[in-house]
Image (cartoon, rainbow, N blue to C red; front, side):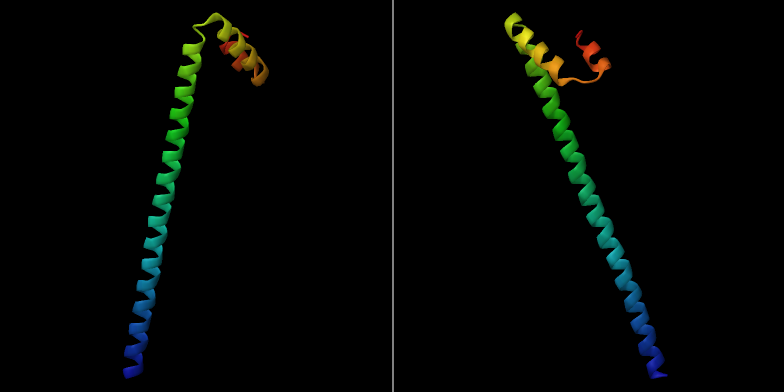
Length: 86
């Protein structure tokens, strides 16, 4: 009788341990997603700011010619080149 009670308590504790491990995994997954999302947002913001800088510099005709030449070399897709009139 006593052993059965101990076995039941052990089984309950093992089940509780499984639940806690699952909760820990869920927390870690949420934290990882949060970090990944923030990195993606930061990357997008950098691209927007760099694009804004390039557009501002293209107001100078000399710099515009250089930037477009660099873009022409960098871009490989026709649809991307078309976007910039290259």
